Length: 271
Length: 303
Image (cartoon, rainbow over all chains, first blue to last red; front, side, top):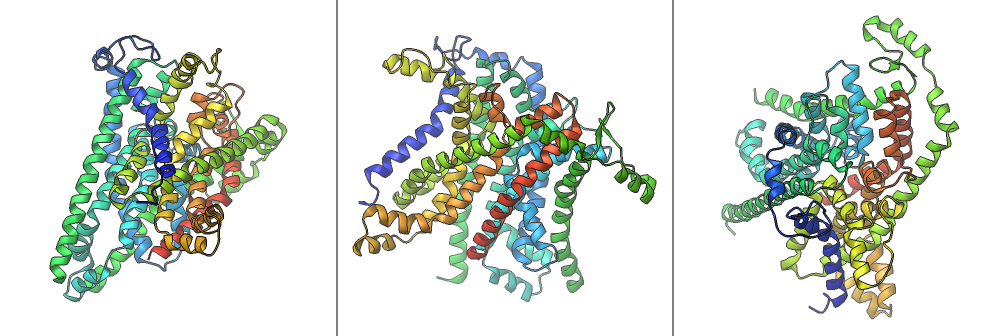
């Protein structure tokens, strides 16, 4: 491999070191005996033990998990529909606006999205709390799901769908029996992405939540402003661990199903 | 039934997500705009006039008569806001450029890597993107503090004898933005570079191009769609960034996302923060449309 030169390898090594070193340091110092997060004073898990006695944090974690599960699931349904609409129907009134509304939230500064949604809830007289938070999360995460699912639909072989329709299947049956199983890995990774985005969000949550619905990032943020503590490092380490395991499982599942799908398709077409 | 059912199915696939986004994404912008035209009041919600749809058409007309552009005049009169917009654009622009310079060799190295390890490398770039933004920014506080790990390392190596003050300056903001948004830049660059046909660069070199000019005239040009997509993905959200300037920046740092947040949360001035958001949106509308066009074009090519 002449092309993969020393320069290429070096830039990858430096790049990944830059990406991962801060996270690794944060994880290491969550096990620090001392209260200082910059001086190593021996291994300890006491910050983790303390964490589980912090009722405020535990409550916030529970709110965060519930919001994330509900919003990711709804966002996956809506996002998949949006992806179908944008790839399957190339001509309908307002399609430009529709695709704009799917792409814009991906780059929209969160302060704008958060503020505008808050003002909507105030305007319609919806009390801020758990449900406004969930609705806001559904809205911004569904667009990420739509983009993930859409890229899978692009490479979808529509002749199988047409064959099912020719044999008398209704659109709903065709979707359930043919389309959905094929795009399932993308739908699943969309769901995981929506879940992690919802778990992480600070700015939109701060605008749209109300009393009694404090999420973990909001809690972490208010403590970070008071200073860096090993306890926050411990919370962050747990969150990183959950996300890393989740993403790994998701990627293994999607690789397996992809391999299975290719095998099935080859069997079906008799190659 | 079949025809009828299929028509309904087709309609619903479009209507449900469309209606959702209209109601929760588009309409709120009009509400922001409307409130930016009202006056601040000590009430809940803290603005006047409160539109009541129940008054019907005449109520709306009355409401419109009370609209004022006072908030926008206020924004232009106070140098703070203009400076905040300017420095946000500047900081976001410089960070985008630096991110591009760092991301390009990484994406290039990934695209050149043996096919078997590419999925793993891709996974390694995506993984930090899935971990919390807040956590990744927070991790830098411990590194950049005057008594932090970076200064400790430099002091031990004898490169400096006084700790550098990086945290709570604009330097920390640049580092924070480049770090947080790096995966957003690497991914579109990689997907553009990976598709590239390497015989083109070889042909250019055979025809007498130096490696550098072959890179510049062939590789870089062909990767331009990825460069544009990456820059937009970094620049647009960075302009309105709140977490990074708030946690890593200092008191002298002016960024519009932070200004908006303070106006809203500390001053409870909803009309002014709405006006700030409206102008920010107007500034970003052109890059956002540019981004959307590039995405739509990439999609139709993928078909």
